[in-house]
Image (cartoon, rainbow, N blue to C red; front, side):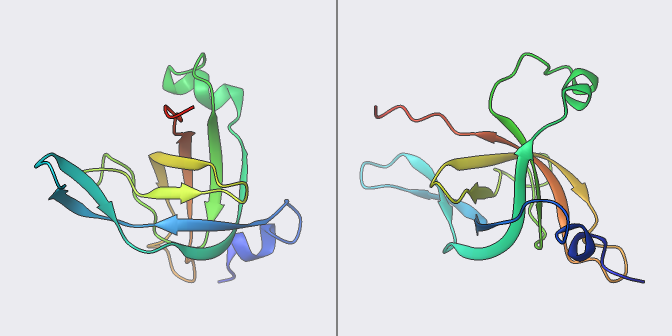
Length: 124
């Protein structure tokens, strides 16, 4: 069996995307529990706007900043673990995984199609 994403990346736009695995929660310097993540790992993938029909089916059609990401890793969303893994785009934007279409477990597939939402920047 051939790798579907490897073939698709010959046609769809691809970028260097960074992936950060959720490791768990630890107390910070003032005792608040905060998410901790692994180091950034560079991966070739593609970030594209999510299809409007998909957003309607999920009941989130009016949600802004939702994208579909195809990447060679087993990214997981908040439904699979305590908190979502993170994707960092080529421009430095941080995205939280909200849903995963798992292909990683199929033979010869080393990727997932994931739905992400761009994290808000509250410091600006």
